[in-house]
Amino acid sequence: MQVKKLTLGPYNNNVYIVSDPQTNASVVIDASFDAEAIAASTAGTLVKAILLTHGDGDHIDALADLKARLGVPVGIHEADAARLDTPPDFLLEDGQDYAVGAETMRVLHTPGHTPGCLCFLFGETLIGGDTLFPGGPGATRGDKDRFAQIIESIVTKLYVLPDATLVRPGHGDDTTIGAEKPHLQEWIERGW
Image 1: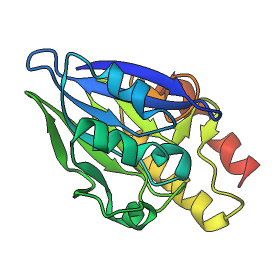
Image 2: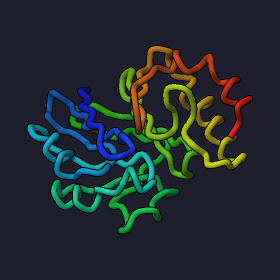
Image 3: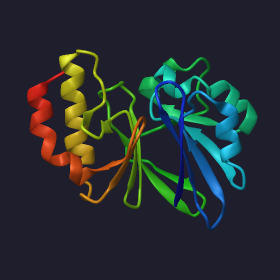
Image 4: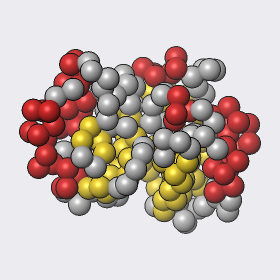
């Protein structure tokens, strides 16, 4: 699948348009800051849905406008659904295969940053939301339990992937599983 990355807004949110070049079907992952720019970046594709990595405001602040522009349904994990201003059109579940044209993405539930955090895996690419960044896990806002949960998510769901897996996070630069794996103990010692 092909990936187009847009970095938008004051928090440098990454929004991804993932498309199947064979069918031109696509999905938009996250809806940050600028619905007009996101919608324009889908040109030439047939947008199937907007998929949300989680329900934090900076990842959904353009959602209503984007949904109106694209006229497509919105999916999120049930644990973050109440964070949206209106109910989602469908729910995404751990382990689910989500079709994008002739291709599929695997949905991974990776709670910790929020209860409903999701990652999307296809080929050797992981759209990681706010679960894993270059240099550590997503913020858990000083909560020991959430920190333990995000570490468990990273170890059990992400570190089982090949080291070459490209991690495309919700903010900032890309990394790989192999680049981050050696630093796990540092993060645990650093704590929440």
